[in-house]
Image 1 (cartoon, rainbow, N blue to C red):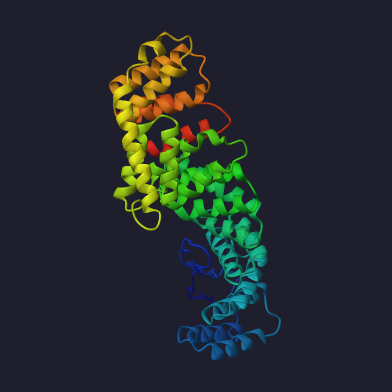
Image 2: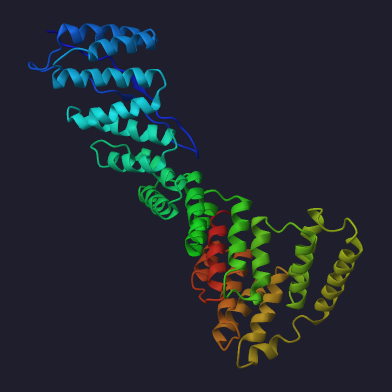
Length: 416
C-alpha cells in the first residue's frame, strides 16, 4: 500500500469575448492520503507511470496507464477518486476541455474536495463552460463559484458576460450595474468596457433612462466625442424636449466638439441672430471659418452672405445698444432686461450683461424662468466664473430639457 500525491496541473481560464480579466492559475485538487486512504500497487503504480507520461506530454501512454489502474478490482472510494483526478489531469493537459470539465465535476461530487481546492475546481468548470460557449452552464457554475469561500470578485466579469452572451440582458445589466456601483463606492474608476456593456444591455432592454445615465458616466470617465454625440442625440429625441432649446443644444455641441457640419454652424448662427445675440452669432461664424467648415465648397457664397449679415447687424447694434436699458429696467417684468443682459454677454461685456440678467431674474414674471437660469449659468461660465456657473445650473428645473441641459453642462464644466 502506498500513498500517492498527484502533481499540480495548472489550469488557465481562456479570455474570450469582450475584454476580460485573465484567470489566475488554478490548481487541480491534490489527493492527500489519510491513514485509511492508500493506494494498492495495482492502482498506484500505473497512476505513477501515467503521471510521468503527462509530464512528458505523452497523453496516449498516460491514458493507457489510467485504464490499467481502472481495471483493478474492488477499488476503494479513495482509489476511484485519485483515478478521477488523473483522468482530469490528462484531459486538461491534452486540451480535452469537455473531458476535464466532466472529471472535475465528478471530483466535486465525491465530497473529497473542500476549501480552496473546491473553489478552484468550481471556477475551472465555470471557465471551461464559458470557453465552450455553453453560457447557461457557465452561469450555473459561476453563480456557485461566488458562493464559495475565497471567490475572486474580479471573475464576476465572466458571469456578467455569460448572461449577456446567452441573451439574458436584464440579468447582465443588473449584475454589471451592481459591479460598477461597488467600484464607485470604493472610489475606483469603472472600466470603459464595463460601462459599454451596461449601455448595451440597457439598449437591448429599452431602458432609455438607464442608458442616458450610463452615457453620462462614460462622458465623465471617458469624455470622447462619440459618447457626447450619443448623449446629446438621446436628449434631442427625448419625449418632451422643446424645440425652443435648439440653440442651447447647439451650444453644448460646440463646447464638446460634436458640432461639425457646415449646415450646423449656419443654423446655429442664424438662430443666434434671430434671438438678438449678434455677438454670439459672430463667434459661431468665426469658429466655423477657423475650423475650415465654412467658406469652402459650393455653399461658400451663402456662408459669406451670412457673415456679411452678421457684420451689418453688429454695426446696427453698436449704434443702438444701451438705448432701451432704462426702459427695460423700469418694466414690471424682467424679460426685456434679461434679454438686454444676454445681448451684452454675447459681446463679452460681462460687467454690464450679467448684472442685467440677474436683475431680470429678480424681477420675476419671466416667460421661461428655467431657461433664464440656464442662460445665466452659461454667462457665468463664459465670464470664467465656474463655481457660480455650477451653483446656478444646479438650480435649473423643468421637464422640457432645461434641467437635462443644465446637468450636462455641469458634467462638461468638470472637464474644462
